[in-house]
View 1: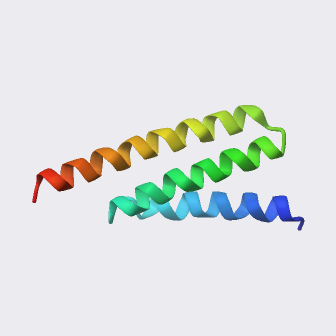
View 2: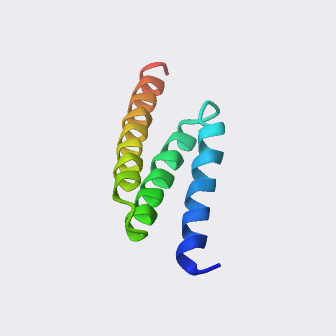
Length: 77
């Protein structure tokens, strides 16, 4: 297994783990955003641009959801 394949495997595994636990804490949503960005980078490095673009969009959506969840939790205090 080369380094790029290991990086891709790590990023996709992190995406799945953070997706599963995202209801437990907003930090898992942030982790999902970071993992999606890493998966996008991995796909772009593999020269699979469509998958990289989709993963980048998911990263932005997860980042937006993280900001929204943090704002809601601050107003509920």
